[in-house]
Amino acid sequence: MLTGLTLRALLEELAAPREVPGAGSALAAALATAAAVVQMAARLSPGSWADAAGVAAQAEALRERAVQLVDEDAAAYQRALEARAAADEKAKPEQRDWALGQATAAAAEPPLALARLAADLAELCTAAGARVEPRVHADVAAAAALAAAVARGARELVATNLTALAGDVRVEEADRLVAAAEAVAKSL
Figure 1: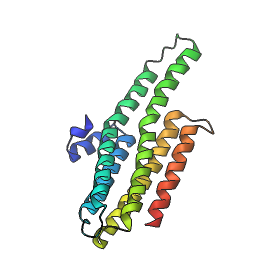
Figure 2 (figure 1 turned 45 degrees about the vertical axis):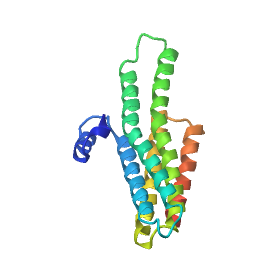
Figure 3 (figure 1 turned 135 degrees about the vertical axis):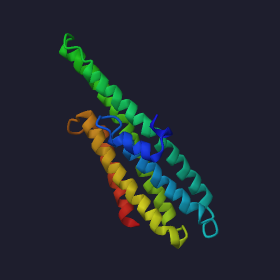
Figure 4 (figure 1 turned 120 degrees about the vertical axis):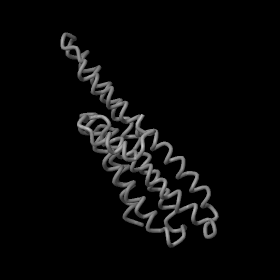
């Protein structure tokens, strides 16, 4: 499990010369960090903002879900790699292609969940940005920028893992999530 590692150990795992863990796990860790920053900003703002505790709780929930995606992404992509390696060349092409398609589609689910979560965090940043103490406003803006970057990176992983055809609804959803997160980041 990657989430049980120290930060240094996680970085070593990400830097190791193998495909898993990869960008999806790194993006999930970055999003968890951004959510923690929003949580901190809200916790520092209860005097000026009645809903600060609720926003801190929402940020914590987003942070915990992002932490789960660190491992989920690595596991899903590992299964896709194993399916590719185990593809039975003796099987009928359509059976082999179907099995590989199922594994790669499953590998696209954690990055899509990550893009959704990033858009949610960006929206939370919108709620927090105007209400947090002025001394932590830049922290919220930075968290929104991280959320937008995570959404964009996750979108690329969704498209790559699907080896998507034009018009794939999951890629289109990821595109919408990126646009929403980037709009928030620019507005703060």
